[in-house]
Image (cartoon, rainbow over the protein chains, first blue to last red):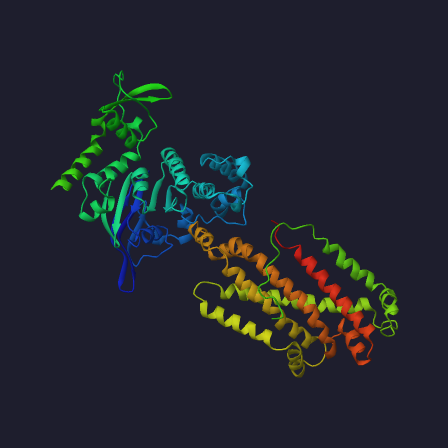
Length: 319
Length: 247
């Protein structure tokens, strides 16, 4: 879907991004992860040409983005930023309608689309359509920000620390909401973040950057179980596997089996807490229920994909 | 500091702008022949003979001067403020602010007097003076308003694919409008006062009774000009306040 070929941004003699080669697959969420100053935001902004590269190419569906007018390119790509950047003089509906308006879509159609999107991000259209950004909480404002980015139904979504300015509670809720939205819409999302938990929780793939270069590109499992370097291992931390479990539902690990006599957990419980319950109860299996009905059994070994990493971490510590 | 170059429009809940009715009404009442003399005679400040030209003509001339100068000020000042606030024009912006500020430090009368040798007597030097003076609050408020536009809103606008012109028209100008409008009001009100000085150069207007009153030591005559121009200033300010966006 999007391919970076030898992408480079250089300021004087220093490189913000250097010889970056990456391919973002269609319908996947890729996190650009890394410490501050690693070039992740620069990379993101080179994709929609808010920053012009000094070398290399960005291909969108095989087409060099330099052959497009920047405005045309950007109207086809959703854009969400940490500071949200809603237009304070326009109401919620007008904000969401920005790109459809720029594209000259009929007002009727846009109006329907706005309501649809407000519903999608969990804001009742009747209640929020006419509110001004100043009347919204941070979480609500960023929901509108996401709706605005999706308004013209772009195949690609660029997000720059979209949940970074929210308080932890609002961030959790919005991450959940966004994960549901992404499961439904299957956009090609590139999300800049420095938050490892967020990356492990939301991303299909992670591009970990350091000092303008790619440190490792792979699935969260790849990075956790097969770190390419000490930097990757250190950046993710020793408890990376546990953090990954924290972002998963216990129900996702469950297999059909006989649950009789086992301690019971809800399917929505996160897998890390389920592990905690196993340790507390001294049981290597749990019965998982959803809405009161048993759906299967979660065994210690089901967590093995991640547990393998716990072992390596332990081994590293002892040697 | 004569003109509040950074005056910001009144914020918060706006009540119904009753001044829009009150001040023009008072002005009209005062323009009915005989009303002002009857009000001022009991004060024994001087004798008021029937006016020639009539007061309403002087008021219209005055209003015309102010309206024309404000129109030209807007046509010059807003594009100037826009031009110097584009990216990478830091130096130009500072230059504009300095030049416009300089215009404000030169005394009104000096500008008018300096304009006479070039433009002769009449309304032309007065107009020039009003433009030079009126530019100050419009340009400096315009710059302040445009510079204060939220950077993240602009980044979002760019990221969503607005062209420079679309960002200006859809985001920057609407957001700068309250501050800009405060500058326009300041400029207009200020010019109503400044325009009275123009009478000394033969521009006519409400400065005429004031200057005649001063030379004849007739305080009543001075008051006539002063009261009318004050009411005109209040009326214009009230009318302009209607353009401010409502909360």
